[in-house]
Image (cartoon, rainbow, N blue to C red; front, side):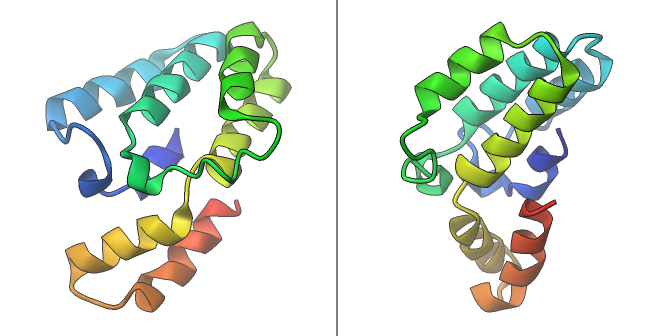
Length: 120
């Protein structure tokens, strides 16, 4: 889940390097889309509310996304669910603001790169 690399430690509930190395290992060694989506749900639960986008989920809803992740079997559907997490579940403007604080610059200076990466 490359999306995890674009989230600063200040934006997650626990910044333990060991925890995140374990997450990366589990994600990279998962042999099923169901396993990857399990890690995607865990990842989303680690995000602080300040960067989650409740409005972004729209009428489809976060709960429905989680249910679809649990039922998903195919890679095409799974990839779409991960893209949906990136595009609808995360407030990338808030993420850019946190990166700017960490780097000591203005949000406008980091926003283009963060927002462009979110559109991939």
